[in-house]
Image (cartoon, rainbow, N blue to C red):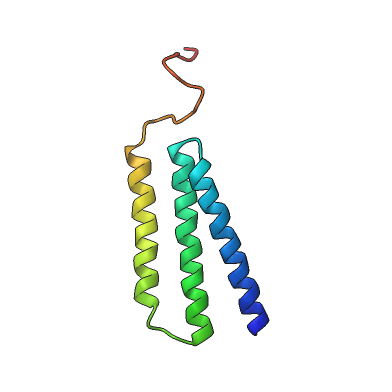
Length: 96
C-alpha cells in the first residue's frame, strides 16, 4: 500500500511541475487557463490521496471548495476572453 501511495504522489508531483512549466511558457491566456485548471485538478487528487491514505473525511469541504474554484475560474476566464486567442491573428480579416 505504501508503494502505491508513493508512486501516486510522485506522479502527481511530476504532473504539477510540468503544469507549472506550461503556465510559465504558455503562449496564450487560454493555454495558461487550461494548465491552471488541470493544476487545480491535480491538487484535488492530491488532497483525495491524502484523505484516502489517512482515512480522513474532514477534507471533503476542502475538496468541494477546490472543485468550485476550478469550475468558476475556468468559466469566468472563458467568458471574458475574446473570441479568438490565436497568436497569428492580428488585425487581418479572414475570408468572407
